[in-house]
Length: 371
Image 1 (cartoon, rainbow, N blue to C red):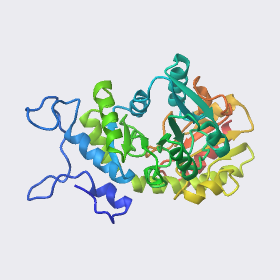
Image 2: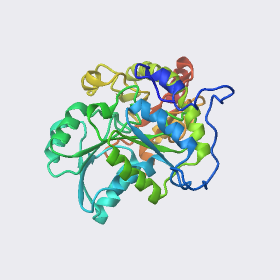
Image 3: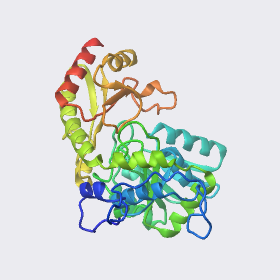
Image 4: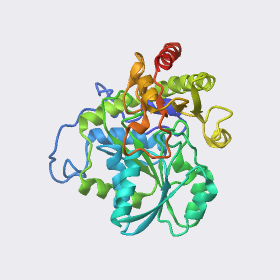
């Protein structure tokens, strides 16, 4: 089912990716459990297409205003993007972001497959200086885990003027906050695991683009790289996506309130959340983003051991790595060896879920006291 052009995103979440209407037609798409197809059609083989994938792809594509491919994980989707670059191509990317991407970029750079220019993505002039000769500008904004915000409208415009491709990881912001393809980006990436699926039971990724030729190259990368999702996982992700706007709205509202309260707590040294008026990214974020997201991070005056103790002491917030689920999660990010050294040792990333905000706050207070 194709969306009407005038539908809002929260209606699109519920409406798109449904089977055709008709008497006794099912409301939900089936789980297409087949690896083999009769000859003569457009699919050909189970690694090339699946009815359940297509339903999810149409829904994500309607959010991001582009054609979409789903992958077995966010990293599989990201790897597909880098795989279509020529050997030695220059990638300009943030020196801080999702640790899996930072590790992959570092490995590709060390091996000589690509050249990576690492920049502070929130420093617009630094990024612009690095652009000449760049084949792909890789932007994650807000960044993981310190919530730095890139000037997407300016960076995308400048990159395209120089003939650079632009890919944006939109996992933190989601299309409810920003839609990079409408700003001129070539590719939008999502960890579908996070806000779209939203229930901590699916690992999946997606790529969206408005360029048919680029879509064909990325689809070949999926076909022959083999990073295909399972149909059951795609069905679960689509079911989760139906409530995505409701979950995100609730979580974003709570994140703002918790960020305000944390910024006044005596044990907290710094809060990173672009929704706070005194956050260094606030003015920029407010200029083009439609919200500030549901992830925040904060550093303690104390050290790493005390930050670990905070995370271990919670009873409502779950101590785990990931984000975007209906449940709140937190962790000290530098517990991971591949996290950027620019991240403070005591920084805790908090993905705010849909619990009652007062229960969350009481849990945070008790955990801070235990530290």
